[in-house]
Each structure stands twice: as C-alpha cells, then as structure tokens.
Image 1 (cartoon, rainbow, N blue to C red):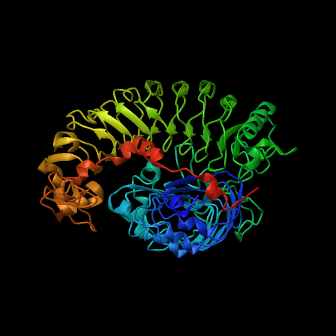
Image 2 (image 1 turned 135 degrees about the vertical axis):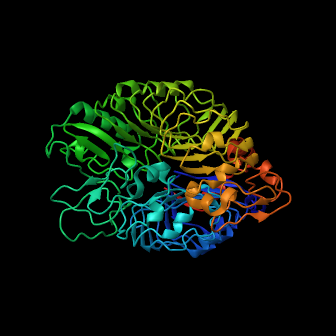
Image 3 (image 1 turned 180 degrees about the vertical axis):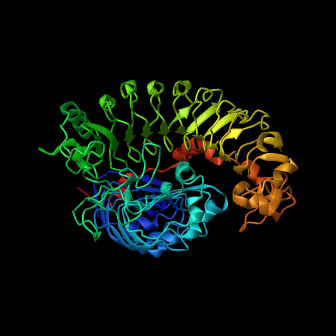
Length: 616
C-alpha cells in the first residue's frame, strides 16, 4: 500500500493483537487518523514526541501495554482528542509528572490509572477545558499512581466530573468547594460530600476508596492497622508505611487488597464454601483469568477464596466481587447469582458481555456496576428484585428502554446514560417510588417530558442530550420532597416558559436548561438566590439562562462566563451565536447513527499498521 492510501486511513483497531516492540514513528505519518486502538498488546518504550503529528486524533487507546517513560508534552498538541487512555501499563509503567492537559480542550475521558505518575495534580489541570465551560461531563481516572498533595481547588469549575483517585499518596484535605459538587462521581459527592471523593486517612473502602452507595461506605481501619492517605482501599500494619512502584513484571499496580478479614465476625479463618469456590473458578476460566491484571491468590491451592484479589467476605460467604478494569473478557457465568450472600458485583470497565439469566437467585444483590462494558441487552434484569443501584452507562444498549425495568421497585439509583436508546420514555419509572437518582442522558429519547410525579425523594435527574420536545408539564416533579435537587434538561427541544409553579417550591436547586427552545422564565424564579450554587443570587435570571440575543458555552452566566451579545441568538440559554446550536443541540443522541456512517467511510488496512510492530 502506498503512502497516499495510508494517509487517508481514519480508524485503526489493533486491540489484543499480540503486538510487541516500540511505538513506531511511521504511524505518525497517518495524519488523517481519528480513532486509534492499540490497547492490550505488549508495545514497549516511550510514547514518541512525534505523536503530535496525529493532530486529527479523537480517540487514542494505548492502555494495557508495556509503555515507560514520561508523558510527552506533545500529547497536549492533540487538540481534537476526546478520549485518551494510557492506563494499566506493565509495571512500573509511565512515570514522572502529570501533565496539565490544558491544550486538550475537548477531552471528556482521560484514563491514566495503573502507572507510577508522581508529584501533585497541577493547579492548571484541564484549566482550558470547553467541557467544563459548558457544564458537560468529564471522566478522569488517576487511581493507582503515586500522586501526592491534594486535589486542586481549580477543579471546582467543573460541575459534572467523575474522578477516581484511590490508592495514591494524597495527604492534603479535599477543598470544601469540591465536596459540594452535587453531580460529581455519579452524584455520590452530592450524597456523601467529601467521602464521595475519597475516604479520609484512618478509613478505607475496598471497592473504590470512597463511598459510592449506602452499602459501600468508608470503614474505620481495624485496631491493629492504619491508613495514612486519602482514598485507601485497605489498611496496613506498622506506623510508617511507604508506597513504592510495584516491580512485578507484566502486572500494573494493584488497587485492590489481597485479603479482607471478616469484619462482621472477627473470624480470620472462615470455613471455605466449596460451592462458592467452584463458581469463582468458573468465572476465572470463562473470562480470561490467566490474563487478568490482578489475580492474586486466584485458584491457588491452599488460598482461601476470601483472600483472592477482588473477593470480599462476611462470615463464611462471598459478599462482594470487585474486578473492575481487570481485563475480563467473555461472558461471566450465570452461576455468580448462586452466591447467596452476594450484595455487590462490580465488573465495570471490562470488555465483557453479560447475561441476566437467573438473577432472581441473587436475593441479596443490591449494587450492580456494569458500565463501560459491551453489554447490548438487558433481557432478564427485571427479575433482579433486590437491586438498589444499577449503573449501565457507556454500553451498546439500543432500542426502546425495556419495560421490565419497571419491576425493579427497590431501585434507588439507575444510570442508563451514554447508550443508544430511542423512543418515548413512557411510564417505565412510575413504579420506582424509591428512586433518588435517574440518569438517562446522551441517548436519543423523544416525545414529551414525563411528569416524574410518583417519586418523592428524587435528588438527581439527568435527561440531557436527548430529543424531548414539549413544554415542562405543570405536574413535573409535583410530589418530590427532596431537600436538594440536581436537574439536567439541557440539549433537548423543550419549548415555552420555565414555570414557577413547577420549580418555585425548591429551595436548593441546581438546574441546567441550556440549548433548548425556551422563550421565557417566570420572574419569581430569578430571586432564588441559592440556586445553581449561588449563581442565581449573583446574576438573577441570567444565572438560569442567558437572555435572548446573548449566549455563552454554558448557556447561563457564571463568574467566569458572562453572557455575550448576539443578535442571532433567538432562544434563552443559547450556547452558540446563531441558529447553529439548534442544529447540533443533541449530537450525542445520534452517536449510534454517526458511528455507523463513520464506519462505512473508514478504510480498513490493518495488516499495514500491524507490519510496523512484531507479532508474538
């Protein structure tokens, strides 16, 4: 193939292809490349400075390789990048300081976990992000490094951030402004304040190093153990622990403890349940266990299952499985639901499919995390009647939202955002009377805005980035008694006025309404000083929506974003100057169609790039 063919290649997926050798400079000649996937190989050496030549990259995934060296400053030259994954390199992995990534203004997903990055998080970290400026969502994965200091207060400019920082060397107090970010970490910060960011020293959480649900709390260390850093997933013995980069070959720094004592009983030698051992071995065998990043004690003769990495027990039974981002591949066995005491199942961020067959057998299963996998169907989930929290974000779910979800009457938190659902919402959620959080953003839902007038304690509702087209109904949230509410209706096709009879009774409200077709706001709402974290008190109606004939990227006025005059801005809350915002109001809703169009336009010549590496 000649260079003229190569330079017009737009996407390349060589994931899990047993590629070895250094990252070849020749790839950087592919100046038109937009999507490049080289994850799950054995590529070694440093990331070349010439990476900046791939100036059209939107997605770059180099996770799960053997890269070393510092993060090159040239990464900040990738001005179009939206997804950057360099996670889980073979130890010691990437070293040196964390970049500010201030040049990557469109970045929405940054994954650097499982390396040996040192120093503090820069005060300028992501400071020029247009995502933050528009109140959009951004995901930052920095856990399992050697970062020190604290979380910079400058990140408080982001209204919606999911950030994982566990298992670093963070000792500084978390800024109070960050602990008040109601939407951060899927709303966990709104629910649990600072604990939703990181557990404090002296405590730990074996799952995420922070509180993520009513059953996954920050726990005090046992009397004979301590934790010296924020975000610990385990406690250690001794009075002056140090943390060094893990040197074991081909295994990135682990974030999960290898052993959890049975805190409920104090029994350090529980009887092993042989049936449960067989179930876990089946999971290991069916899901690529030999290539898991963390597999301490798994299937080791004489090692009790309660000492296996990611397995946590109470008394004699498995209660929690946390194998997130661990290179599971395949379909986990339905026998997992036979674990009679299982209450937490976290398999997120693995390229797995999943079957909900026999979920009714898991009578104690409360929390199910399957986001960022390859799930394409929810068939059978309606029988999981014990479920309290379900997160299925970033998957391949499509079609109509299944009616069987209405059977899950104990749900308190449901996240289905960033999928490909379309059609009317209907009354699927009317039976979920316990809902506190419902996230359906970034799909392609249509029809009228539902009333959601059955729930009494709804604290977070996200319907952004869809195609809902109606006025706001008078009965909207009419029975909601929650003391605080975060509501995101942005980037739909809603029309009419923002009514006082709907919202006037809320004292603490964070509300995003930008990028719709609103033409009026009831003036009494402009006197609600606490709303939008005080912005309504400071800027009146503009703190809710920029007036007609003005705009900014957030669609409302904040301390750093005044509403700018624009005669072409016809609607309240315009995010561009002119009518172009009505054209792109919900581009995320059409991600499935866009991806299909892109796929049809792609030139696939995998063998050519593959020849630049060595196969093993």
